[in-house]
Image (cartoon, rainbow, N blue to C red):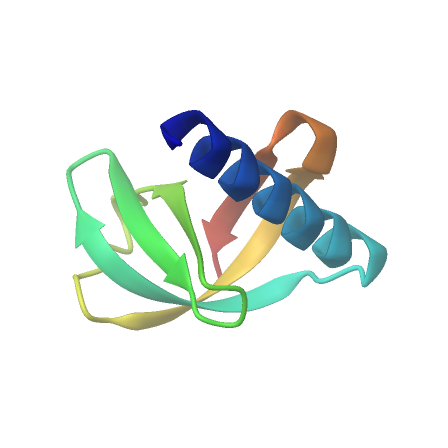
Length: 86
């Protein structure tokens, strides 16, 4: 059952990333769920998808903050979504 759930999550994530690619989505709103010195754990409310973003030392973000991010790299087949703070 756990394996099926994992496959289902990866399948859903692939199609969400594919949609973002097809629609050429460049800017997104994100909710900061948690941070550490190296990265921020984000929720993309429009897609109910969680991602990680490298922290910018010059522009720190805090948990609970709503931020705007830009898509830097998007490769649905490789499950890659790299973003940066706008």
